[in-house]
Structure formats: structure tokens, C-alpha cells
Image (cartoon, rainbow, N blue to C red; front, side, top):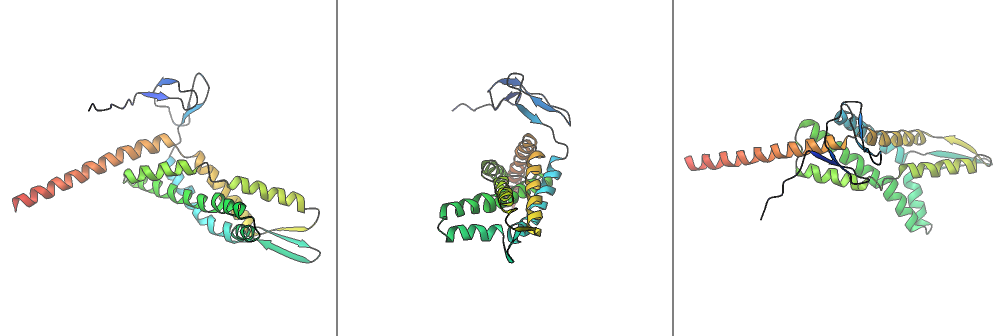
Length: 227
């Protein structure tokens, strides 16, 4: 069976599939496809450190954003408030099972998993200990990237504020500001994530880790033979 040789000197446009000669762009610049003008690569300075710091900040903000009340409504002296967790549970209890599950997955579970994966991947790359499992985790992060919909939930909050502002007094609780911070951190982490650099480092470090493991096994066999 013939071995497959991977070409590392070419670049394929993800939008129009134009084959281009691969070049290294400078910090602060981006590569653009000459045919469809799609962004091929945007060089981000200190992408690993920025991504790790932002994902850690998102994990810190996640708990108050999910469990603290977002808004309090005062209607004729009757005040009510809720958080994201209780809202999803209330939807499922009142018969909107599919809607409640969708909110639970897209606004709670998937954003949390994304932040955890991004932090672990960035931490391993920063320590120089990326492995094949790191590549699998990073690929999972990319698959989940389209399912995290915090911004959609934020639109729902804004619609609720617009509809209720003439009917009730609205108080913005701490959970609301934590949720906005979580949304901004999530969006910013995607902006500072240099995928090409991450994949390059994961590939290089995983090869080094495999070579180190092989050398350790060979040294152990030689030591066993000498005994």
C-alpha cells in the first residue's frame, strides 16, 4: 500500500476551493482569497495565552450567569424573577419540552462544554503537551461551535425587555451583567482563536510526544535485556 504524502506548501480556500501557494503572513495581517475574498487566515499574536485567559474568564462567569436572576419584573407590586436554569426547567414543566431542552442544550450545556474544551486545549498547547486526544477535543470544539447560541438567548432577553418595559418596572440583576460578560467573552475567544496555529502546534507536539513515548519504550526494552 502506497503511503500518502501530505502537501504542506499549498492552501485551499474553504469557500471556493481555490488552490493557493501557502505563505506565512505577518502578525496583524490576514490572508485573503483572491477569487472570493474569503479570509484564509488571520494571524493573532499570543493566541494561546489570550484564548486560555478568555476561556478561564468565561468559566468563572458561567456559574453566576446561569444561576443568578437576570431580570426582576414589578407588576402592580408583584415582583418576579428567574434565571436561565429555572427558565429552561419551567418550559419543560409547562409542556414545552422540546423548547426547554433546546434552551438547556444550546444556552447552558454546549457553551459550558465549549469553554471547558477550549481551556484544556489551550492549556495543553501552552504547556507543550498536546496529544492526539487534544486534536480530538479541538475537533469536537469546532463541531460544537455552531450549536452554542448564547447570542440567540440574548436576543430573547432583549425582546422580553422591549415588550415588558411599558407594562412593568424592570430591574437588571447581577445575573444579567454576568450573562452579558459571558457572551462577550465567548465571542472574543472565537475572534482571538488562531485555528491554523493551534492545529500546527497540536500536530508538532503530538509527534514529539509519540517519539518520546517510543524512545521510553525502547530504553525500557534495552534495560530489560541488559538485566
